[in-house]
Length: 378
Image (cartoon, rainbow, N blue to C red; front, side):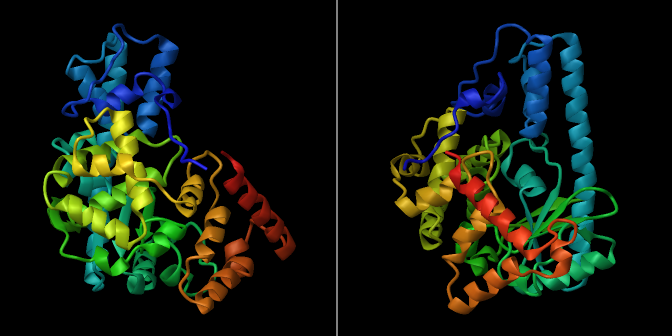
């Protein structure tokens, strides 16, 4: 088994060129003439999906991407809409941090504003559609209660009491304002998320300001690690905006001691395959020179069979939670943890299955089907 990679042909033209725009040393090959109507609408929709509308607007205003007058107006309107949503979400992020802080709950802002304001030369190049906030595992139930009192509603009930705190990535909450808030205790679902040393996420972090409030993000090495998890284990085909996050962070991470920190932590967490895959794919698809320490290490890294199997759960369009859950079971540290985890998923509370499964047998059949689907597409 070898790691499946994502080719540039998986993206509409000129999406890859947009993701490379303004990256030092990267060659962005834009078309010589404006795209036809159908190709333009595909590119515009893809730019929204991949969170690169800011780069689309920049490529047009820089004169790199030829467009018609109408295409320029559409790109500008799309960028403006994305930035208005960002402003609304930043106001909400400050509110969420305030609610948690007033309740004595420490939090860290993930992705979104944290990356845009700390790691991009121009924050308007980085758009986002929801919020991600990290809290300590021991605080997640309290945080959910505090936000629930403020009108936030869970999208999915907890399988069994304590599952969020012990096993899950976190939960998704919907506030009255109508966006999604992902409340994290770790980076991702599945075995990779279990292996994260959660205590190491809570170092000093880095501060940034939003809406008159000072917020705290992860430290730069931890931001880089999270970006690698999100890119390598997130969407398929890989989201180019997520690869651009890694490229922006590489500018600083690969120039000093942070590169060594990243490699040591990745080794400690058993996540070297995740980081190597994310960095190698970023260098390859975004056309980076690949001469930095992390880029050279990622190019030469060879995942073992288990790492290939775990990565394969994420490198196709039909990835499923059931397949990731089965892999998770094997890395839980104690037998009692495995028993609790399995019991919660096989025989969850009625609220968890309400409206989805009519019987235990039906749920079991569905799980078997999802496991096969999640493991079989290569």
